[in-house]
Length: 162
Ligand code: IDP
Image (cartoon, rainbow, N blue to C red; front, top):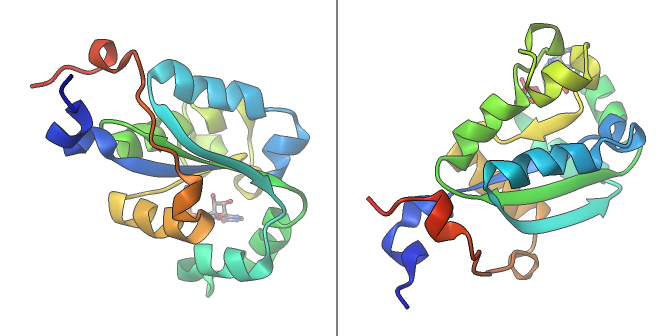
């Protein structure tokens, strides 16, 4: 059988999604993961961890001069996070749409932030904002052996070749 992923590299695009400490505390992990599963994306990495300050400062290096940066680090280390890598066609852009505006007050209903939050300081979830950013973040959060290659039996149904 033909290796579709090799022939269509776009289907191998990956993004990093993290359920932040408020999402874990509020028991939203299952509902959030379900949205990515039912959209048709493939889960290739998953773990729960208490994030170190070192990892957080690298993850949010572009925000270090922002006034909210210290409280962002406190928030992100206030409890465990669940971090995932999802794979699929245009997964970065589609995930950003699914997650919604950074500020939940402006996020549309139907998005994760629009359905589960109302304040920018507790916005439940992280999603990479570009394919390049996703690659950087995935390398930061995961070792390559933690990302699994597996064949999804519905791939020929959810995604057309051409
Ligand atoms: P993004 O998470 O939607 O990509 P960024 O601008 O990269 O948005 O900000 C990263 C995170 O920093 C946000 O998700 C949010 O948790 C936090 N943040 C952004 N702006 C503010 C703010 O004005 N006050 C408090 N926290 C903020």
